[in-house]
Length: 335
Ligand code: HEC
Ligand code: HEC
Image (cartoon, rainbow, N blue to C red; front, top):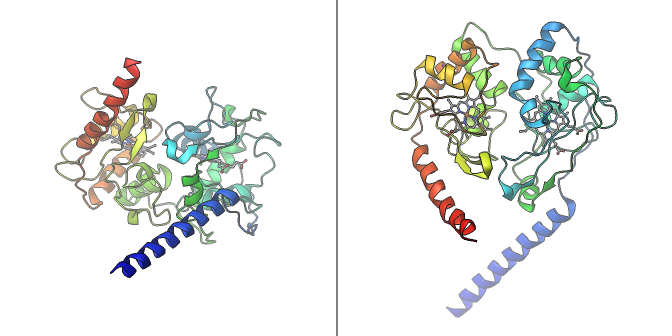
């Protein structure tokens, strides 16, 4: 018997040493880099229609993470990311040649937005990838980045470098990876098909599932609907004042989803204005999306009806998060 325990003990020790060795390795190498990719040459024609569409997409996506207090995309601290991932900062993506992305080619920007890889093979782990955004919409984003709009005008401002925690670094050796580049054209959805339009707007443009699913990291970016807990919500994030908050269940589950809570009309107004029909406000990091049209949001509502229902009681989860918070608050108040 004893011998068996010894063997188990030794192999456990061995595993620990191996895990420890891996951690030390990861701590030393940091985020892995890759072979410099072959990037297709693209020149985007910057039409006013594209700039306008690019601006809408930027307001939903890029501004949220890259805009400073003056509404310039010079980069900022990402405060809603839980501390175990480290201190994360986005980057200057203005037209400045040195601090911004003035020297990137159109093709390099598109390649990066699809895969997460820069031309030198370095990988940007926290920056979302957009494998399902239509080519036409990606071109619109590029047109906006190159336009004369205020947020993208050259600025020399530069934020601190991100400090990735060991957990984040470990993730870049396991779950967080660049996406493969597919040369296939990604087409816009058929705008007469509300389900297709809704799915595209929610998954490829709004990236709604990335917060409203079961896990912040373990997601299927290429096939979002295969993501664990797709639209079932419950991811713990940091809201205003660093208070923990769980993301909402957007499936049509009768008890815990939105089926009985909101009509289509109410859903549209709520997402556009950030206020629920009863007047309570949606809390950060959920931000209002006034740039999404009634048609697009109505289509998202129709699409959500088709998503497999998930029973996930978010009100209960939020109550638990609050009661976990409360003792800590008391302790600081008592000091
Ligand atoms: C969830 C937050 C988030 C969103 C949304 C986001 N970014 Fe980023 N982005 C980042 C972070 C963080 C980095 C820095 C990553 C790094 O250095 O590893 C970054 C880096 C970049 C870079 C590389 C800059 C450089 O100098 O290396 C570009 C280009 C970029 N983002 C463009 C965009 C565009 C365009 C959009 C909108 C379509 C966008 N980002 C949306 C967080 C975000
Ligand atoms: C950065 C993360 C994030 C993203 C991206 C996001 N949400 Fe949310 N959303 C949240 C959080 C957190 C809540 C909970 C807010 C609260 O409880 O006050 C929420 C709440 C909601 C609610 C309220 C549901 C209810 O039961 O009251 C709706 C509707 C919603 N989001 C729709 C969307 C749509 C549509 C998109 C994409 C366009 C989206 N969200 C993108 C984080 C996010």
